[in-house]
Length: 154
Ligand code: CUA
Figure 1 (cartoon, rainbow, N blue to C red):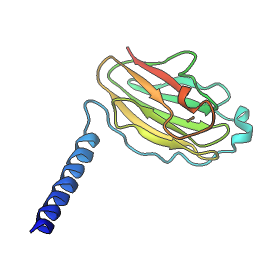
Figure 2: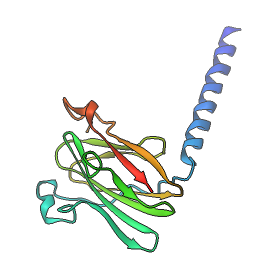
Figure 3: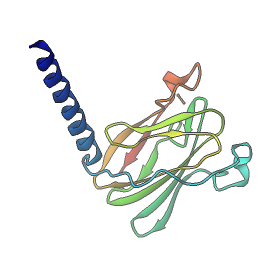
C-alpha cells in the first residue's frame, strides 16, 4: 500500500531532521550556552556598556563582546572585524538600535534573534583560529541582504 510507504518516508525524514539538528548542536569547537541577557532601553544605548561596543577581556581566557545591530550593520563587525583569540570563551551581548535583526555566525550553531529592548547573550568557545561571517538572517529593511560582518579568531 502506498500509504505505508509514504508514512515510512515521512518517518525517515523526521528522524533525519532530528539527527541533523542534534549534529548541529555539537558542531566543531563551538558551543552555545544561553541567550538571555536581560532587557535594555535601546533608545539610550549611549548611557550603557554599549556606548563603546567591542571586545573586553574579563579573565585569562575569557572575553566579552558588546555588539550593536542596526540598519544595516554590526558595530563592531561590519566596518572592522571582531577579533578574539583562539582557546577563549567569548560571551556576546548583542542589542538592536532599531528593529529586529539576526546574529548568525556562519558555520557554527550560533544563530539568534536580536530584538529591540532585549540583550541577547550567547557564549561561545573558540578552540582554533578561524574566520566566521556574521550574517543578519532576519528581514530588517531594504538593506537587509547587505547586513553582514566578520569575526576573526586569531
Ligand atoms: Cu539586519 Cu536583516
